[in-house]
Amino acid sequence: MKQRILLVEDDRSISEMVEAYLTLEGFHIVHAADGEEALRLFSQETYDLILLDVMLPKLNGIDFLKKIREHSLLPVLILSAKDGDVDKALGLGFGADDYLAKPFSMIELLARVKAAIRRATLYSGVQNQAAPSVLHVHELIIDTDNIDVNKRGKSIKLTSKEWQIIKLLTMNPTKVFTKEQIYRSVWNDDYFGDENVINVHISRLREKIEDDPSSPQYIKTLWGIGYKLGEF
Image (tube, rainbow, N blue to C red; front, side):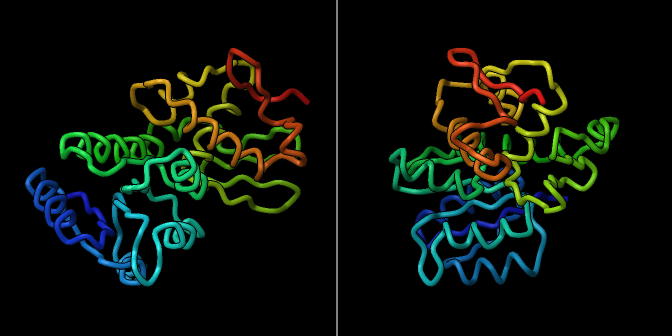
């Protein structure tokens, strides 16, 4: 069965080029030209990946992303002409899994698409079923079967990357992870020193699980080395 991609892009020339290329590579592409149409299509069918432009009519890409992240961890790859660190942080902070700046090559796009789908498949696959189903860290309860993090009886909504980071740390409670190790483990890809990606995800995760993100207890920073799970 072909893997299905929801392409949300209002630029016709780009959408036609991307759709033609990925179709030849064996993917089934469903196209939406605005955010509202994308929400409708997302609710009607299942997909393996979303390719999402940021600047969209009717409903912009970030608002679309926020809405689907209320109930889905489907991998999302942002495509945008805005290439500043602020824009990257905004997209990744709201739950995007990766970011590709326009103009981009079809070869790089294909590589990112395959990597994102591969990561999502690996973390939902059979190989993870042997892990403990429920992990306890102080007041956090991490349910690996239901992909849920609970604190003081309240479920915490995480993006797929935030979930994978907290799971990685809690399953290796005594290990210190460098940023490169986290990137390779969670993104399952080569690390090229883009610390901003890791920093954004760690910061957003701390905002959700820490009582005081400015003085984190669950995710400790070892300056010049990396991160580890806090000791209680």
